[in-house]
Structure formats: structure tokens, C-alpha cells
Image (cartoon, rainbow, N blue to C red):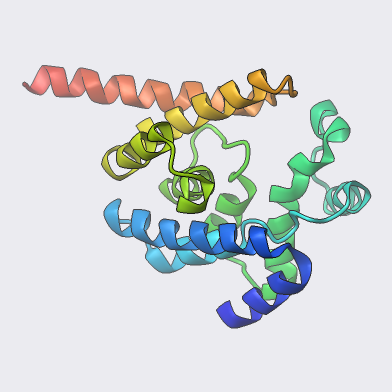
Length: 198
């Protein structure tokens, strides 16, 4: 399946995007091993997460409508946000992926979602932090956190995305904020538990 997926991607995304996808796949495998998640599932979700990245807005909207996806006003105005859900549909229809956890991880890789599974958290974080994203001190520090605390990493990834969106005057989808607050609550509970046990 991997070779077929890479061949499909080579025809449907840019060379630069394919490099990013392979970086996400590799980081997903490494994070999965670190956090005791199935590395094969992580590899598949990472490899297939951006299948629809280069689909035109009209095609993304058409796929969403055809598959009964909710299209909120923000996604209607910014159809590229639907590429995550559309990628999961392509993964199912083109590559026979029926594992709900893998499909959910693909769906959640852009905006996140409260109560995400550890696999979804891994793909969400790897999409933002894979090595091809850059080597700034901020990103390197965030990568270090990703090996230590997956939920802290989700929170930091949301914070980073929100800052970038605000700085570039772009629309913010509320799911990013909901995801950030959910991860933050988990981190706070972890800290409280650690304090009680010390």
C-alpha cells in the first residue's frame, strides 16, 4: 500500500508537499514508538493525511456534500480546511483504509478535536513539527516537548498555530481553540497529580 500511496501522491501533490508528507510519516512512527501507540497505524495516518491537500475548493466542497459532512460557515468560506476530511475519504475509497482510528487521525490533523485519541494527537503534532517545517529555536523546543508529553505538545501546537493565524490576519476555526483548551486541561490535571504525588 505504501508504494501505491507514494505513487498516487507524486501525481497529486507538489514535490515539496510530498517531502513534508514523508517527514510527517517518519515523525509519526517515532512519536508512536515513544508514546506506545501502534507505529503501523501512525505511519499510515501520516502518509495519507494530505491526500486532498491540492484538491480545488469546489472539489473539496463537493466531496464534503456527497459524504454528508457538516460544512460550517468557516469551512464554506475557507474550503481548504476540508482537505483533512476529504483526505480521510480518499484514504478509505482509494486505499481501502477502514480503521476508524486512522481515518479520525487524518480528519483531525489540521484543526484537532477535543477528546482526540493518542494517534490523532501524534498526527496533529507531527504535521506541525516534522523536520521539514524548519529549524527555529521555537520549533526545536516544541519538538523536545513532543517526546516528553503528547498533550502539552498538542497545546503548544495549537498556541503556535493560533499565533501564526493572528499574525497573518487569517480566520481562526473554533475547533483549534477547543482543542487547545482540552489539551491544556489535561496538562493541568497531570501537573496537579504530580504535585500531589511529590
